[in-house]
Length: 291
Figure 1 (cartoon, one colour):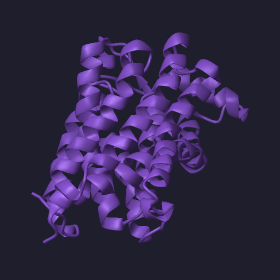
Figure 2 (cartoon, rainbow, N blue to C red):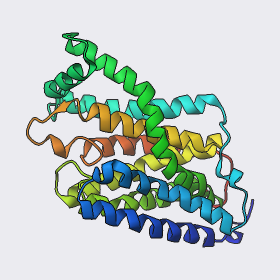
Figure 3 (tube, rainbow, N blue to C red):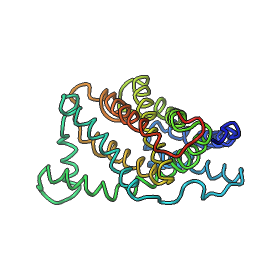
């Protein structure tokens, strides 16, 4: 087996240093404006592209071929699964929230606004919801992938394969998850990237969720050899949770403590999925120190 000691951590440190330096610009702009919608959302888009740009710069510094970032498509079945898995774990979480009354289904005011925006008259709330999910699921995914790509060129294009050479699946999933989650914390703690609960609670739930789903992202990235699995996973996750399941949920009192990426339910489901993909780690190609 290949000796993990020969793989230096220096490329990772270069990448993280550049990412932090570039991200600091957009952290400042977002925090100064106080909202993720600052700059009409362009500050957030800029932040999301910092890891990707940093990866490209790092590859240039290391004199590596940019094609090594995993641009090939790979087997299409992995791309389909990447789209469906976030829908699956989000649906499990939100069904539990709705069934146990932690939040209500559905938000009539949100659906009323959707109906008015479609301009189709009294088409019925059920039809409005279905139409919204279908249209957003198709066209919204394309838009969501544009922003997710910026992060994923860095996180799963560069960082995960680099860590995997040295640490294998389990440690790579944990380390990349901690880094990925921590990168979000400035805007979680000092801007409005949360669902209205206390910062410590939102941060705890968010970090558990991100570390958990990192096992999914790492597994698909290594199994498929394709960066696009992570892009689709990320796009589907953001789209269905932030734009479909959460807006459709009504507040029953303490709903903010259960929904979205900052409530407790999704992290619990995320841990279950993490354990499942951890049990499938031996189906990946061998890597040093894989445990």
